[in-house]
Image (cartoon, rainbow, N blue to C red):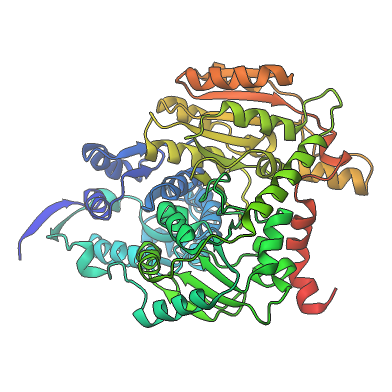
Length: 569
């Protein structure tokens, strides 16, 4: 056997590269310096965020638009601890991130002591959250650890994994054998069984009113075009989960918004639901409550999923198609019956258009810029091919109601809804798609504040992200709750801050907008600047509590669904 002597840091980079990892998100800490050295030599992106949680969030953004897991590193002690909340988000959003954490030497880490410097037992915490967690105690163990990490991260339901090593071990040299290619240590993508495909096609052929429900895995696995082709062959209505927003453009003649009156009518009328890349999450009523409850005893469900264990958890299914999503969609596309387009779709599209027009007409005009109006105006100025990253509380709902889904990539953690992840995710998205592809973050001011200094990271890496800030000087959802319950806000409103000037001070482009007529020109200037840009839009703080936000009733139903469904109250 031929052995090659190298540092463990170099070996980690070689293992990551052959798995398709293109970015290492890590502060330039002494415990990762050898990894960064060899990653840079290999031509990988090396990005040092201002906070370690942002490393994981950025890796999540990169994955969202490529389907390829990336790596995030944390320094021993507090650096690794800072990774933890983002690892929770990655787990709940089913995003595979390869997380590395340094620790004190095992002699110190395992000693019974008090008052140790930069030391805390982190691996047990990550083990509770991640799909796999391991401590590497010698360079000879790193190959097995990384291979198992990738096996776990990308199999079944994807998720984060954690590898911990002694802080100086990355510079330690060892004689390593030749690399084993991934195809030899983990299974390649598998198609669904032909019998299951045949059963699904039989149901679709006999269906009177089929409906296609698509989730975020369609975007993550980069099979939007194939999904649309399948929908067109079936001729059925298409709705997406909240997390799957944008995988089918809103203007498509078969696309209906899940939360719209038309979307709910199509769901209630369906006799077969084809669910693709979704677990039937709570904000899709578990696929059995609300509109789904109508005629549910007679409704058949076909579920496409990568994970055998995930099927049937949130609702029973009749046909399970377990396999790689692009391969399984291709199987269905080849075998499914060609059906005429559902004759009710034009009427449903017209109903949806009337509902939107009524919602637009109902936007209050109190003088201050309403966040709903902000989204309408922004849609006219943001280029159609822009990848949209979303962050915030009520900002997400205003966006969902009034910012038309024209592109295929809307990046948002709709399950866990971790505030503050949007800006670092946008960094990852921009790195993945290249500087020539427009990327826009739509964020509330509260959410933006969590990791505001990642704007400096974007400037440092010359990433022309455009940030649109819905600035109502408050945490919007909390403001509404306080005003309704207390009558005044307690620590949910903010001092007015000129974020645009802060952006300029970092070397980016800043715009400040108070009036509706100024918004579109400001956004266009921001995109034209070629810099990291921020458009601060001052919106009406009264909107949070004067009138219900878009889909307020739907949101309330998500929160109360389990209690009402299981206990009747």
